[in-house]
Amino acid sequence: MQRILSTQLAAHAGESVTIAGWVHRRRLLKSVAFLIVRDAEGLSQVVVASTQARARLEELTEESVVEVTATVTLNEQAPGGVELTEPAIRVLSAAAAPLPFELHRPALGATLPTQLDHAALALRHPARRTALRIAAAATAGFRTALTEQRFVEIQTPKIVASATETGANVFALDYFGRTAYLAQSPQFYKQLMVGVFERVFEIGPVFRAEPSDTVRHLAQYTSLDAEMGFVGDHRDVMAALTRTLGVMMAGIAEQAGFATPEVPSEIPAVHFTEALRIAGAAAEEPDLAPADERALGEWALREHGSEFVYVTGYPMRKRPFYTHPDPADPAYSNGFDLLFRGLEIVTGGQRLHRHEDYVDALTRAGEPLEPYAGYLDGFRYGMPPHGGWAIGLERFVARLTGAANVREVTAFPRDLNRVTP
Image (cartoon, rainbow, N blue to C red; front, side):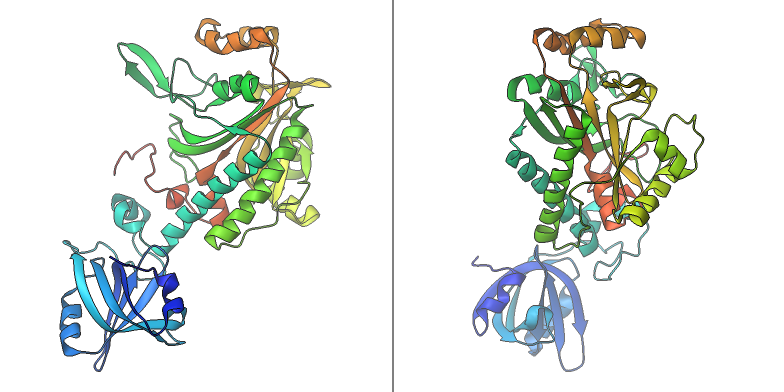
């Protein structure tokens, strides 16, 4: 099949070409009929004038897969300024069941649960496809940005012997007669790999057994992780993250054609204690509530013209055991969150790097050392000061597109209630 895509038609004006795709819509008028064919790049308009071709078109059902051979004709009113005339239509695969919703509407009218039940069909809608294209462009930009900054891509196990974060919920599984867990993050492994490459990153799934049935939580999501050695403190990590976000946003604009906000060369940053004051929260609060994050987002936009803001110095009691405390005030951490439009999308910070500090931190947390033996062993042999971050891809894309629910930008979400399709 010498097939071309919808976006290539304009370069073939006057020629006979073959396209193929899905029947997006049929418009049956008295004197003429139109077939709109959808492929991976967009829509093509096919003009059906002959009696024979019209009869063929009337038999078609939406979402059937067809091949069309026709002449490319200029028409400013058609998608892309061209249309296909004098077509020969061949059905490659007919839709065998009535559609649960219409895909040619600007917005899907079905409820989100219905869309998720029929994900294979709903994901064909342009809005849903756009979100997935943005996610693909974001991961490509992440990879490009970090490679440019001398990071090396790694892959780490998703079956682990112990929880990555003390106190967090994990999915247990039977691993050849003994208990293992699905990894909550690549945190331990990416830290150990700093001892190999100095700077590493990973794009992969993580699993959180949190019973949170909210619009911002998933049980499985894609994490964009990075870790870098020889840092002065968390500010070096924040600077690398800021550069990375700039490349990601540029890539999304170019590859997905989606308008993105400007990433300042220096994103405004506020200490946790100051963040509480700005948000009007009580000074003794150990963490930021969603309303506090929204208030900080509004403040950053109003005072700095930035849709991004760093919050640094979270209390140590709210950070994982491997977080480096602030040397000036050990009750607070050299950790940070990045808020985007009033929502936390990145968590990061400086880590401990001395073996004795890990032993002390786990002991104070009441954690036995044995489950962490393989992790701790890496710090016996010299590790540089280091730090890193993790971006939740789906949450980032949802915030960027304005989706009300993270499931709207996830192909096949897994949450408290859903393990299919």
